[in-house]
Amino acid sequence: MLDSPTNDDVSNGLADRPELSILPVETCDGCGLCCQGIGSPVAIYASRPGLPDPHPSRPPDLPAELIREINDHFSGLFRGQEPQDACLWFDRATLRCRHYEYRPPICREYQLGGSECQRRRAEERARTDC
Ligand code: SF4
Ligand code: SF4
Image (cartoon, rainbow, N blue to C red; front, side):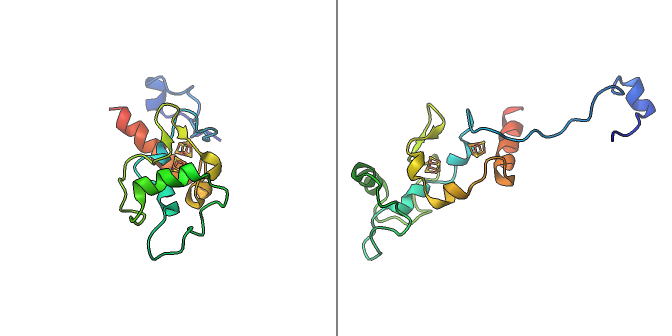
């Protein structure tokens, strides 16, 4: 239920304005924020000397050319040591993942419309509104 309008609301013309709610996030179209500024989650798929190969999270059917691309970029690095801008698989033109079907567990657990998604979108709105 809406509160009764105050005298200030009436004099400011706000008395008839409905209460605004935060709308749920229903699509990633045009966003892609969670694939930027976190490095490359796919770096966990890289082959590393002295560690089990393949990484247990690497999909068994990950194509050889994608493994080569990841190894070329990240082999020998631990997750967190790679460049922390956009993910290797992030497509800046479409703002989408280039190989979504092979995305790592952390990307599968990230919830569209979840608290972290809402936080990043709110931060971006605040950044671009100024
Ligand atoms: S999950 Fe949220 S932050 Fe990530 S691309 Fe989709 S809408 Fe954007
Ligand atoms: S693997 Fe795909 S979904 Fe995950 S951060 Fe990279 S581009 Fe985004």
